[in-house]
Image (cartoon, rainbow, N blue to C red; front, side):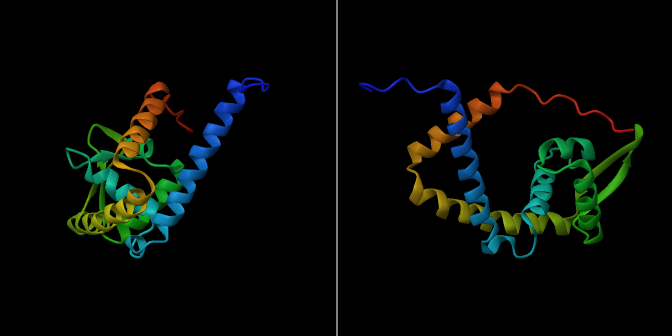
Length: 160
């Protein structure tokens, strides 16, 4: 860079973040407009997907909240809607009267699998032409490294 001062680390970090954020928003908008999400919104699918990955079948509402991108109040309303649709079941946590446990119903599991298969195909059709397999692996390595560097999420404060 003859004659040009070195790029500021602060500016580079800000531009990198903006690029990552804008790419994520563009990809999500494209995926949300696809056919996979005609039956269920992305945030609803996110809840079903997260529950599908729970080994015991049941997950506490507060643990679900740690894994989705919604506020606690929005998640509670979304859970109510999914329960009314017969996609998830809830019960009080046996060891804690205030806690709530959630799990997929058979109908919820089938819908999650159906949407998931289509969603994965849509992701592949979007990523494949844009990035080589080596670039996809490098992007995954970098985003994992970034997330890992942040450490565990701090505990949320109970609003009561």
